[in-house]
Image (cartoon, rainbow, N blue to C red):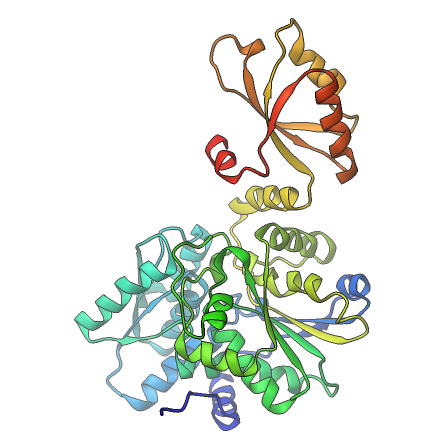
Length: 419
């Protein structure tokens, strides 16, 4: 029976040596807000502060250096990526002077596409194809085989895993005290498997918690089934962790070393992202907020403990902020959508605004469903409240004033169709 691959300390230390010319150690810093919130010593490993603004540079640089060491004829590499891995490959290729073709989903945020082109310059060609990473990956693999180029996998490759594992080595080198918990984001599993393997080998009592988005929980499913499972559908919002199927190598390592894998709602991720920005002036992408969002699931266990959250990246597109804020408000119970049937009486709309809304409530969306007879037709209305406790009085006043309504927040299919 073939033995599963496990990163060993010598290989990861060699990777760390390789990275010295391109990658600086990222800060490990205490976060006062989350330390106070959870009554724990919460530290952030700031992988968002790399030049390419994510940890992906570690794996891609290590992999391409290894290719060059083993094959002097490596002149062109290929990769598929949701954006951050592509930036790592682009930066590496421009530094080492080799060509790359990078495949990304058409849904990749524009900011990430532009960063890839900026880092790669004349060395990198970008191809946007497919709606998901997995679809772009299939095209990249076919292109690679046709042209006999080397493929740089974003997560399921020993050299990639060992590059990401240098974060775990670096963590332990940066602190004389042990960690009780390390929370790590999970997409395809390259980061989680690398960090978990090294930290557990050097600090066996540390618990490693993987955190993945609820809408793309491919690792959770794989762990339950005992093998990689391709999900039929995923939510692409947390694009840095939206992977339909984890790798064979990464799953085997996570099975051995992860204490737990939890999922968090996309709205909770958005709220965490906004909190980091407003309270700490830390700008992250949705995947970068994953590990911190996971703390809420362990709030009782981590009390009084020493906890590390790996902040994986900050490649966020400013045009997504309104969508992020909307998801955060919905998750927090502060934004509510209704289809309201106005009573057959004059001035019903004026009555709704004057008598139904509370003093701090605000209409943020209003759309009639009929072009004629507007005053007496149904309308889709979005209402933002300041406090969760104001929701029940809002419903009571609509009922007492004979405004019939359908609540849309708990009807996802109707919600998506109407909005």
